[in-house]
Image (cartoon, one colour):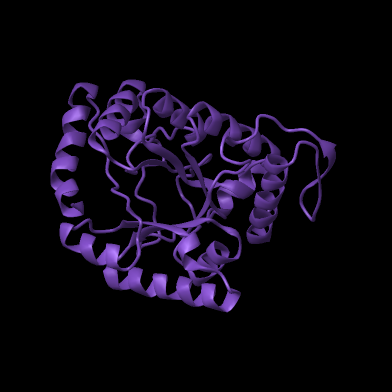
Length: 286
């Protein structure tokens, strides 16, 4: 489910109610998007809408994903938690490494760190981060985070990150690693998935045929790189959410269909909202 942390889903009571109900109903993951900064008149094109405009109002509350996912993890015991996506090049990678490992430990190893390179020039400018080379910056940040996760004493030298003989604790719960998923639908994004990620989060794809095309590219890139495509976990969110698509998505090797929707503002009705989603979608998975 990609439903919390924004607008009506930014209330503590709603987060608790939706997270608990989703856990009990058998949903796989709670996904959390991110924007640190929104601007009223952005000249940057949002890549997931035909008109290039993001649908989230600029005045809407948008919670920090790593913080609110901690609240969701505390309210649940089974369901996965994932950033979908954290705009990694906007952050210090050592701080993200520590925050993510902390959340992974406290959640019992339930975190997937979904990352993206970002699209808003205005957001990068406000944060004082160069928009150019954000692809290379993201890859290097992931390498740096994996270095500190996997080593008691870590050193790293790169174009954007340099450290020597440091300790960053805690470590992730699962063998010193947290699964990294890459968000994005472009050929370049799929190249990142195959080159250095553990999974893909495709967002707002138009239809199953588009999914099939994207999966085909991932498999070809895996063949070219000598990588087993079965190593990758594939999750997608569709622009139009239809029961009729579930079977074919499964045949294509999609591991998770992410439902995008705004929860009710009234926390007392949130559990019923989740239960209705479960009643509608879960039979298609049986």
